[in-house]
Image (cartoon, rainbow, N blue to C red):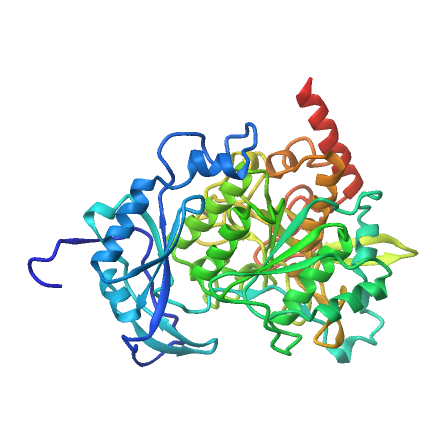
Length: 524
């Protein structure tokens, strides 16, 4: 930067550090074409994103709480001055996509980029904060995509083929799980759209049709949606992203076969993840009423700007009556971080989502006889804990969330909120890449709950939207099977809410009845 250049200021929360296992490979190619997403603040004034009042349509929300045209214009002027093109502008999502060569993009935002390699692959990385001119401080809330390191992992676990014949291993079709949890009957999710967020992999349409044929139910309509250039591209590996995609489609589709499934494919970066979510939430064409997310990673691996932007998008969803269900992780309270501390998984730790934990299920004669927090000898365990970022939300204040197990005992948002069967030793039968497999993980619980929400939406004739305040209120004891045994490492299951299984597993019909009764009472 020359001495007479306008001063730059750091964008709060944009600071990046490199993973400890990252190896520097060299400088970037400055001429490589790239795109980034810039997110601006909400329009000042108007309704709050989620005030508990009447729900907004997508058009109403865009008008009241989308981006101010003047803010978008400021970013466009900045881009033009730095030789960048404005590829797209979306006022509802408050985002602009800027394109150009990566050298110009890096210079425009005052960052130094290099190429690195980690066990997850090669990526373009940076350290420090994104820099902005003073006039954009307070206007721009996020700059995503300069650093394209892998952000998340899918939360699924395949039961090893060698274990499938063990007496201790059982498997369920998703329809069986729905029956065990007494999901509402007489509804199929007709008229609803469930959004599935996928950060890699793909599915084979013929295979999906074959799977539902074996279940004896109609295959749901599955629509792939491309975000940031990604698409439906199966990799041929059942224990990777393909397994996640198949699991999400087959569980949600079996539970709610009348619902449309919109699969939003995006790159596995913070930009791709957030763009996929905002695209789904503000999609006026497919209009999802439920979003299922089975990908995540420990809060420690995110920038603060990315977490706040993601949470803001979930708050947008709540204002429009869209329920967001997120898997809480499959690696216990450590959540794949080897520092000896407890870590909550994000986005399950967002205060505006339904965090979904995992259990082990014992069934005899078609009925549940025991359900415990999932924790197996192979290292798989339900995620859960206390957020290091988000405060205890008002609706969780009386739930008895304990202090964090970490030194200092921080009080924060407790994860998960609800649970369902996730142990691969009592897992779900799926078909993926031509292979019949038994799959577990909290990845299965998010689409399971998404399907249940779609059934309730159809039965009620309206979206249930942001469920958490009701779940922690009048429905806390009525609609759940309390899980009181088991642990995930730092936390143990106990009566009432706990940081392994939340409020418990669903009693689906009682949940619907409770929601219906609450709606009648509110109308009086």
